[in-house]
Image 1 (cartoon, rainbow, N blue to C red):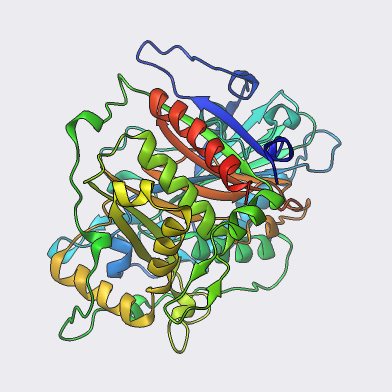
Image 2: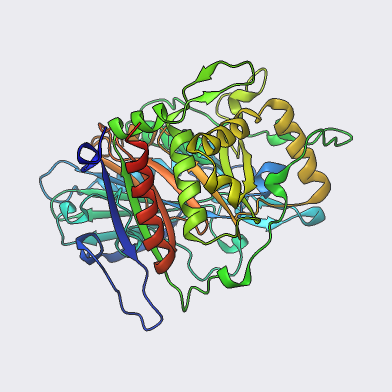
Length: 469
């Protein structure tokens, strides 16, 4: 596939956070779209009946991910103006769902031995009602992440001094004059991962449609408790701190992050996979997965864009769903973080100077290393060392959202036509689907202006170079 054929298989979209003076500096139409949102009501939604009122213990895997995740779900609604009962339906079914998923209605605290836990107070989930006089089409393609616009559709916790002050769940429902509806959800990652959130949403939407819940939570996190005594059988570089070059430490006040999304179309992905076949130790050839080649391209391009020195170590940490890794698998509906982190690492020189297949093989081997033994060892490592995932410095995290059941959400007025993160956490890369019907995948991240300009050129070069194979 030559360059002429590749043209049109790659797109990038951009949003830039405000600079120190508060002025937006958009560079294209994606960043210049405006959206007016007015908050009309804010309440706390509590479980419809009394629930457990004690301290709910969290696992070691929960302790390692102190981040908030913001997601936007867009619905066309009924197309006949505002749906008067939509917010009421969403709010009332949320209260019912919280009876089963009661930890969401509590508060994060530091319990014994400095470990985070949930105090199940039942005080509820912050719930915001908002309206917009715009048509929902004003949002455009939200998979091209535009935090300046999309964060108006979630109740975020900017300014929270620590993760303890970030609610475990918040919901904002914005209705548009055309009848469109946006449900914006912010989850505290300490309590749940994406799979657990989707289980909750499945129960919530079942109740909204007066159905019996298809998913109920398995709340006992002791299944991921440490062994007695703890035993670290394997190295865990995912938790090892990594050097931070002072020249690359970013002050968000003086160096605002630029957010861009890069679209990988199916035939470009096929060419990338064909260009990076992996030769195993027994000499057989393995075609890498789509996620492996996307991870490799993003890792190489980010490492170069940040100017990481050839002798410095660079790491790519991947969130891996550990549920199916166990024998037997974790119980259905396991409520919590079932995520383990694979760690692909090497020197920046090895990563950038070797053939593309080297990076793909490094990612592949790191993912393959995440077994039940690896996860049990990681749990024990955290027990003994009280560490968190280090995604700073020369490391970054990547997470694949494209396989989550995001597009199954249905409160009774149809499934969402678009789902996307409202923003991307610092030093993270998110892989998402463009829409319910699309096979196109988006890679989204935030970097400083200069680094993002380099990243954009590099990733296009990588795609063009691989297209020649």
